[in-house]
Image (cartoon, rainbow, N blue to C red; front, top):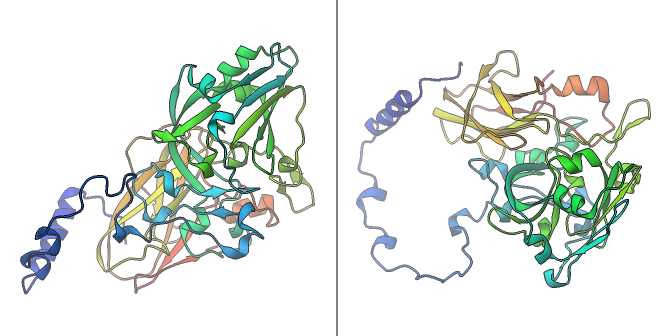
Length: 410
């Protein structure tokens, strides 16, 4: 069944056909509804706005058996239930190593030291006096899709791909602060450390730090949420989420990496021969169909909108292909909305589903010429021992009932 690209005309024809099938008046349109016959709640009933009660299932979820304790665990963004590209603040996935730090912003400090001319200790207000910037970036955990290395396991794109979000950050350029401190000759690396109980720290090459990294204190127009690093976090565009140190308290410059726990025993990619790839920072091009998917089954036959997300840590998404038959045939999807560098892109494809089984796949391309690989292609090089940097093509099996299952094809 080919993808249908007739656009608005086909959509209107499908709606007309549906209307023609109506044999009796619909009570939902002819019967006065309760909400139209009595006054609703007034303003400030909820001083901080909350979603409709009918959207109560759209929440972050965790997988209990993935980790030993919630203080060092993860919750997943409900990608299947979201539209557009911007992730609401309350739905951005969480990943913690020592629980959420509860920080009084008035007492929080950022220290810059090491190979600098003038060590600095800055308050949040000091940072807010510097020139501000606003940037939209995706953030993806290196372990996103990690449980799929050995085969299809987690049944839902919330769980297979939900360690991902995309927001607008407000803050200052990291380079502004480092240049104010004065970088000494010979400095090549930056160590960023959090104020949480884990004191999580990562080494970052100085050229990256001076390029596009940010010190962010707001996301989507409001202060960072506590689980997202309030009151200050590091933003490292396009690179793995573990490097985006939350509750940022310290930056140290030196001439060599620190070889911390999170870049030696963790966040390295174990190869079949026992060696490991280290410093694999960049999140390569990746995509996933969010609807239909296991948590968003098809409601019935007829006009169907296939929708999903694509992203690349190397640049901007230029094209996404869709396959209905497990990768044997591909057609270009339609990108819609703002498609910018190092941010999520939304894609769509329209088809008329007649009830046959489908093997849905998406394949992303970025402006560097990189094409998202199959899982088999990745495994031939990387093996199955890693849990990081799995950007292989995802397959959903759509059954005649409309139910969707996580599967693999070879």
